[in-house]
Image (cartoon, rainbow, N blue to C red; front, side):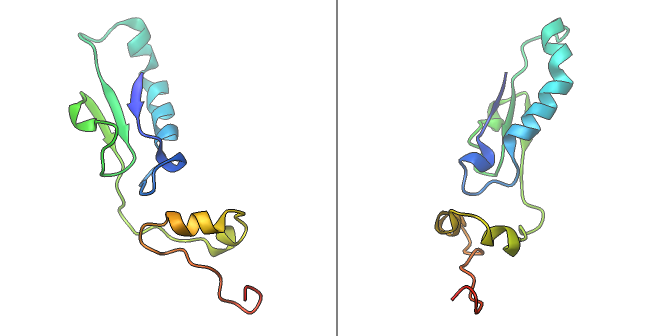
Length: 105
């Protein structure tokens, strides 16, 4: 198994979605684990941000997500989210704000 953090499902500061990356890596490494072709046990882990909740510093192979550029907010998608107050509260840098247009109030 690959140890990983929850990514966008739970983390407030993810740089990537851990689950999708872990699935892709696991698919590539599957034959090595089932065929017992590696010389020893290998620990693989993935952390979706620099907080490293997945203990990547203790692993043989570590994947760590980090932001190269600030995330871009898609205002059309945010306007359609039913949990907008939760989305606003979850943003650590305050980049998401209520719509201040004539229609939005």
